[in-house]
Amino acid sequence: MVNLYLNLLAFIIFLSIIYLNITVLYKCQPFPPKLMENWGETADCIFGDLMKITTIGASPQTASQDNHTISGVPASHKLAEVDLERMNQYKTIIKKVGRAKKIDPAVIAGIISRETRAGSSGSGLVNGWGDHGNAFGLMQVDRRYHSPVGAWNGEDHIIQATDILITFIKNIQQKFPNWSKENQFKGGIAAYNAGPGNIDSYENMDMKTTGRDYANDVVARAQWFKRNGF
Image 1 (cartoon, rainbow, N blue to C red):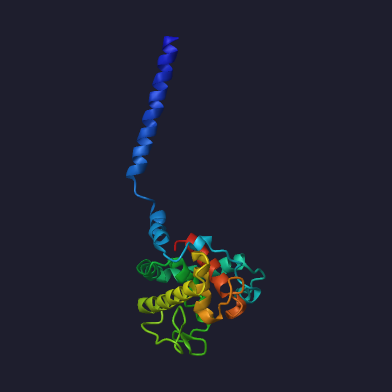
Image 2: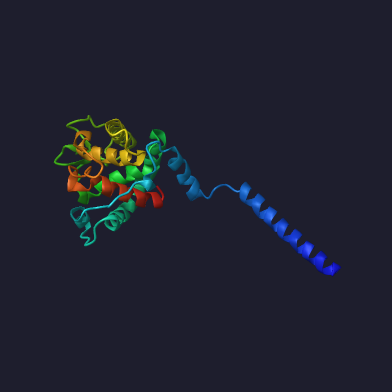
């Protein structure tokens, strides 16, 4: 009987030592690079949690760009996936601007994907200009309302466009103070396309955006980019 108790005690001590070693090892290790990569950006986004924003994704019209027969969130994810290789060229800049402006970099990527398919020639860009020569760069800054700066695919351009987005988010915060931060965030994305004056309610925020799905599509794409390195 004594030997049984001693063996049981030795086994418990053995398990305790293993547990302590694992605990110490875990605490001493840095976060995995991928987790560390996204940790700061998620925590520092002051406009709301991207992953908590509800979205219905792309309309059939938007999805048809790549001849998809699907629509909604799956279509937005597919469009974003097609753009990923091109988007990765700008990943460092996008993340840098996101950190500096305290906005989720994935949202910047979502807008770039929606506006120009991350610089694809198939999006209609000519020397960095789109929308019949009225909009400039990856994020399509409208020269009728703003004076574009920098190279069409450079950091200065992304900074300017992100500042414009943030201004619109703040406009929506003031216009709809009772909305949640996430709803205001989404409303600001819609305003980036249609202007804050055309955002009348949460339910109909996309009614006057391009394709009537701009905010929903951008959010769905951004959520995909968030899960894939942005």
